[in-house]
Amino acid sequence: MPLMTDALIIGAGPVGLFQAFQLGLQEIACQIVDALPHAGGQCVELYGEKPIYDLPGIPVCSGRELAERLQQQIAPFKVPLHLGQQVMSLAPAADGGWQLQTSSGQVFLARAVIIAAGVGAFVPRRVAIDGLSAFEGSQVHYYQTDASRLEGQRVVVLGGEDAALETALQLADSGHCASVTLLHRNSKFKAEAALEQALQQAVARGVITLKVGQPVGIETAADGSRLGALQIATGDDSSETLAVDALLPRLGLSPKLGPIADWGLAMERKLLTVDPATQATALPGIHAVGDICHYPAKRKLLLCGFHEATMAAFALAAYLRPEQRQLLQYTTTSPRLHELLGVAGSSART
Ligand SMILES: Cc1cc2nc3c(=O)[nH]c(=O)nc-3n(C[C@H](O)[C@H](O)[C@H](O)COP(=O)(O)OP(=O)(O)OC[C@H]3O[C@@H](n4cnc5c(N)ncnc54)[C@H](O)[C@@H]3O)c2cc1C
Image (tube, rainbow, N blue to C red; front, top):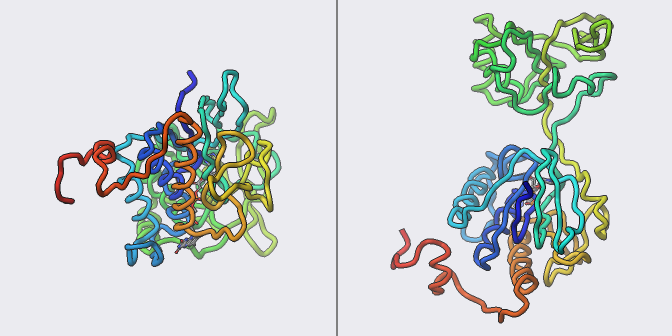
């Protein structure tokens, strides 16, 4: 069933989240889609624990904390968040507005679309080995995998960063797998100290095997129907074979602009050209905000993205309700905004 909404926001990064807040103040119903399994965009994915010092009125806060605060701020509007799916297509809908479809097959019908796609959708880095992609979804799992689906299997987790160590530890703790091997190209990890310590303990207990090497090829069943083993270069021109039932690559995520470039929108250096007064693209009802948009003197900063989201919300209110006179209301004093925010009647901030 298609989901109908006034506005669909592509991207749950900081700007997409604040866009939902601004649309809420304008009484425009919206939904958000993001390729990542969590909200926060770059703030969480690239610098979750690092401090931000240039947000007005907040002397310091981490990327993750900002994402949490933004989600708290939109809570009164109960915005549906569709995570772990990338918006793949955008086309005019039969009776006006836009039809969008995600990688999970979900269809949206939206009167307006706000593209807050930042530097692109964060997608897992793929393993570049001939023939491996044929086993994606059956034996090669790039996204979160339920340990119970790996019952009795010889699992190889690939990578040396937090996500790889976390996955290996979770699988080992679950007790579902026949074996868990962590394969990394060298013996140095780029992970939190606590995770490395837990890994060493798991190795000492014999529940995880560490293997140093680079996968360079695969061996399959005679009819090619199953992945049987990885060929691994172990340095000094030597190689070995590692039996595998399930391969879980955790090599990090990289942003990909992806299908947005094919939607017929004007672009300049992979960015969407907009009118900064409205954030409108050349297509009716499609606006772009945050790092993905471009106009003269654009700065890729959070503050600028938040401003753009505000401009886009006012413009969309005029676009969706042309008959209504636009009022500037303050959250401090407007009884209507207090009602929307669920704070009506509370005389003091708690
Ligand atoms: C290391 C670092 C430090 C920074 N420090 C600061 C700072 O101190 N102060 C400051 O002001 N700025 C800082 N920035 C910049 C700031 O993080 C960005 O300006 C901000 O994240 C832009 O937000 P956004 O929502 O536009 O995009 P993003 O944060 O990139 O979010 C976009 C989201 O859209 C999703 N997406 C993209 N395409 C699709 C699709 N087709 N379908 C579904 N989802 C999609 C992505 O998965 C992503 O989650 C920093 C950036 C970095 C990398």
